[in-house]
Length: 212
Image (cartoon, rainbow, N blue to C red; front, side):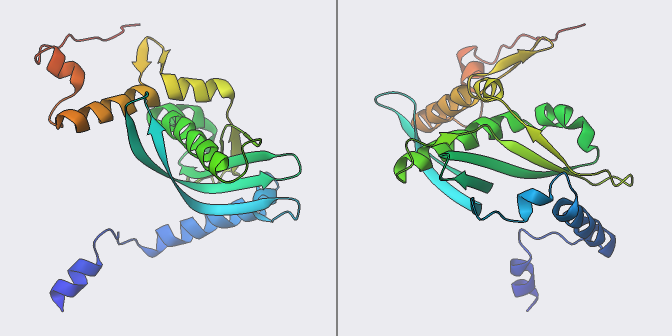
């Protein structure tokens, strides 16, 4: 019996009642606040798809590809205008500082990757002429301030940065294209103990800090 209980507990986290109450409060704000309630109230002119898994093949070039999967929190599909809006739900301690969280937690990768996934899905489901918009992040606040939920709209520039990489305040952040290529290389060479860069440099790395 003890073994069965331990097995059933895998992947689960024990939380106290205060955390449950906080989650319910954030959820109610998302559903009732004027800033966000229209997202969850439904619209007869829109098709809503939630928690939708998308499996697709990411082609690196004519000879290489890698299997990928994404699970999109929400897709709002306007069939009349032929527009698809992917959205993701986030919570953070300070939702008015989401710009910082976006970089810190590498949400720029999620943004680019999910838009890529939705475009592949649309092409395979008779929606090739539909425009897939950059993601919107619906961000609830978990602090004691109980701030109102906010919606952050991203742009094509954000998608390009997340896909191809970018430099911010002297620091280079790799994009999806480079990371996928590294994963494909690791699979091909069965080398997971260090990066391709570290292997090419035979473990001799250079400290690269931008002192401002």
